[in-house]
Length: 107
Image (cartoon, helix red, strand yellow):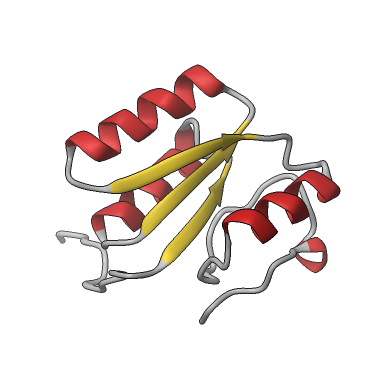
């Protein structure tokens, strides 16, 4: 059996991915960028975030990053206010409870 991701496009949308410097977060950021979203990668590891953004750009995607501790609710709220709105998606979001999410989504 061959598995593949669903065919969907997110052109013109913005996505925020936390924990995006490696692992599942990075994979989610890459997938969203490949689907056409402009992705903001968020994590504490600036070198890894910069490399991830460079790689996404090299493959035709749109990405930027913010170095942030996602357990700091005030910092997250300020960042979302400044950079959002972002789409809502059932993705990997680490560091806070879903009830603490801020900024809402555009979908």
